Amino acid sequence: DRLRSRGLGDVYKRQMKYKMILWDFDGTLAYTGKDVWNSLEYAAEKCGGRLPEEFVSEDSNLGKSVKEIFQRIVPVPEEEKYEMFEELVRVHYRTLSEYQDTYLYPGIYELLLDMKEAGIINYIITMKPEEALERILEKKGWTELFDSWISPDSLPGKERTKSEMIAYVMQKSGMEKSRYVYIGDTWSDAAAAKENEIDCIAVTYGDGDTQLLRAQHLKYCVQTVSEVEKILKEGV
Image 1 (cartoon, rainbow, N blue to C red):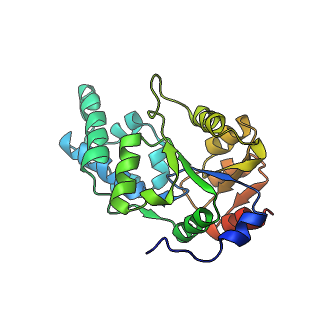
Image 2 (cartoon, rainbow, N blue to C red):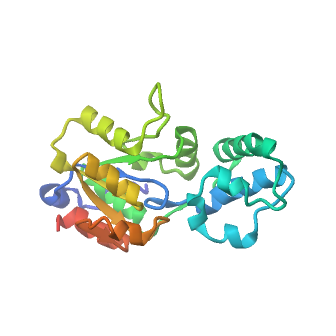
C-alpha cells in the first residue's frame, strides 16, 4: 500500500504551524507543460499548420494567451479558424489526452504522504478546469493524495479568480488565517495569498517567472521541494 503509515504523523502533528496547505497545481505539484503543448500542437495540425519547434521548446510561452499561440501557427490560419482552434485545444486536453508526459515533481509525492499522515489538509486551488484536473488525478492515481480541490469553474455562476477561490475555501473551513499557507510558482499565486492575508511559499522550480516572484519580496521563496518540506515541517 503506497499510502501506508511512515511513522511520522505524531511527530509532525505536534510541531507544524499550518493545518491546511493550499496547493497550486501546474508548476508547483506537477509538470504539465508537455501535455499542454501536445494539445496545442494537435489543434494546430487540425487547423492546417504547425507550431514552430523553437516556440514549443520554451515552456514560458505557455503563459501566452491562446490567441497569441494561434497567431504563431505556420502558416497562420484564417482568423475565422480561431474559435475552432480554441475548442480543439479544450476538447483534446480535457477528454482525449492521456497525460503521458505529466508527472509530480521529485519529492512531492512523499511530501504529500507525510502531510496526509500528519493530519494536514492538502487542498488544490488551481486555474486548471475542473474536468481536466479530475481526469488527471484519476488517470495518474493521485486522487487519494488530496482532501479536495477547486477550479475556476467548480462553483455555479461566473468563473472564480484564484484569490476568490482561496477566500471561498477559507470561509468554508473556518480556521485562523495563520493556519493556511498557499504554495505556488507565479507572482499571481503570491498576490492571491497576500490579498487573503495568508502565508505563501513561492517555488522557483516550476513554470513561473523567477524574477517576478522574487520582486514580491516574500518571506518564503525557495528553489527545491526539500526546502518546501523544511518550512512545512519545521515552521522556519
